[in-house]
Length: 477
Ligand code: PA5
Image (cartoon, rainbow, N blue to C red; front, side):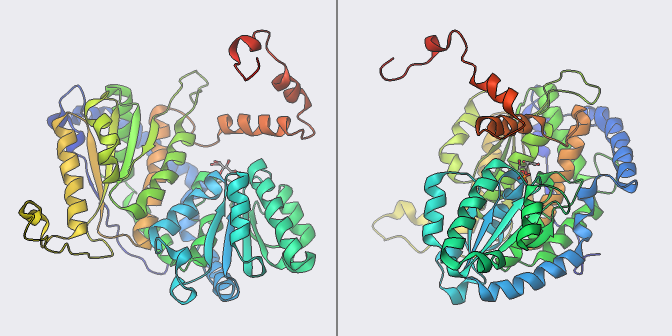
């Protein structure tokens, strides 16, 4: 079990999502929760049994402290050796790491002097955007760069292309043999093209756990290596996840926070037409968690087929917002536009910095209300004000509060939202695992890029419809 066991500390306040607060046309009633309670307790029994039988393997990740020890040791050596670290990966192979590093390290760590940074600078090659990739490779010091290529399937086009480019630049700079020592691959332990290449070239490798979808791998080597390279206490991440898991043992919707969140969001969608779920942290550091959650919720629940193979077109569109910035942008829409959203605010009791607001010049007395205040207090009051304004406008909202942002809390968030998503799948009656819609696009990309085995799909894609000219407007046509 994780070394630093502790208790879950997140608080979920859903009063503003209830009928009492926002009216019976918009808010969830106790009867709604009662109505879904049996589905949830049956799904809980099924998920628990599947886990006992060796399924739901993502639930085991918080226990992998041996792997965390190994990664910590690897990172300890590498951190002294390298000035730059490039993560090459996309989707579930990068979003969790980005969220973790953003939450738990200095927001400008890449521009801090070496002795204040705690590990190498951190770069991500996710999109195969030629401008970003070439700028990254221009910026890093390749002689002192470690490349971590991460792909579960071992073949995703964007990742493999970016990797080949980064690897090529590395070989040009340091030579073939040295380059092999500066690459670490995180991939399936047995299968895939990257596994094969890693074997041929002798890269150091770490496993992506089989039976776990990419979007649930943040607490495996996929997320832990980049985190450890950036000086994050990865054991505390696992401990936080384990604490949340311990808190989520009940099959009772009112006792299990993940199931409660699942019920609130799916009921909001199915009964009250809240087809969008906004995650709005009031902390820049947690914005990446919103991005990670967006993928988790969208890819897991956006499904055409139910588990009994009927067309259901399930899902709720996840939106990420940032407080207080989006109070000056999206909130206008959330408050007065279509009442089609459940808004989940994330609050922080104690920010890691305390910044007092000095007295304004005496000539501007109207600013004196800020005097003696503190920025964290202002931000937190903005969150409360937003919750109030949304509620007044009959917009259902809830607030999840963490006492502070630390590795333990981030681990808690990851586990909480993963279990919420799995239970939401059960209420929607869809399989939250797999991503056939993503695979369709991946296959079409392989076909368009001329990969062998995809010829007939390529022919389909390149067949010009008869009316194409009618709908394409280009210069000279
Ligand atoms: O959640 C998933 O499984 C996907 O979003 C993948 O993470 C993403 O497509 C990248 O795949 P891979 O890790 O195989 O390169």
